[in-house]
Image: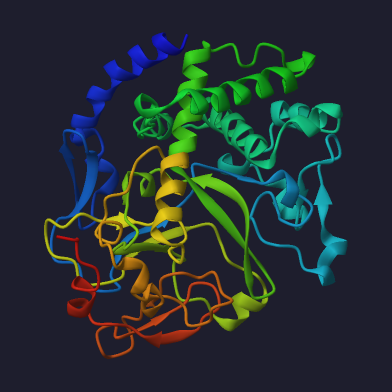
Length: 383
């Protein structure tokens, strides 16, 4: 089965050169798609992009799911963290009692990205059995995303969304024996938890289901919800357009909320799941546009190990190939509050100084940023 799957993926990898299938997704954005052998598809600036400029906006998730361990504290629909003062408003699924909502409105919602289907309900009921101890949070989270993708495929009136998902990279040609073992564990999890009532729902050939699983593994984004003033990792989501951006440990773009959060929004934990991609510096036409997949405050060895384990590549970004990188302060570009997980600051285009200051996506702190010229020489490849 593994050889058959690899053969299919090798044939399908020719899709990487068909950039014209992807370009319509970015109509109106200052980007274009390129392809290079060994690198695959990548996004580049179609013109000069100013620091802090919006590159993509109103990016909604294809699917999203809350971690099993966070289910009693985070809303399934809007992914906001429950406040103790409003616990009396919390609702849950009366059948499986494993999916929670901040309000009746969220429970009544039938949004495609967070739809709690009968199949998922059946699977989550099984997790109350002794089988639960055999699987960790990551396994269950990936399984939930898979179920939601299959349901979205069958319910979405726009079939191009699933077709776009299937164009995402999966790195299966780089899988080692350990990674295939992990994938097979996920497959067995689904088969065991499917339940008699829904037996046969996963009737697709195993290699097709494994193909979806591998794309989830290579393209999910973390869902962060606010608990007080702290950001807590509480789940994962798939954003179709954002998934076409490659990684860099010194990215020139970041994912942010649609607008600078007000104190009222922070107080109410009203941090939505709609993404905006912004530049963090001046970007010239033809430069590759990159996001970061991992926390930037980690040393090089840890970042590279994380990327190799989860995304199946060895990072060769300018920061990773600078032998002195770990001695250089990446925090000059990040939230000044060391207790905050906000990461890179968003250049403030309204500061009247061309984005010389930046604000934190999480705690709303601000600080002066290095200039774009200083940024370009911050890290240098080792000779």
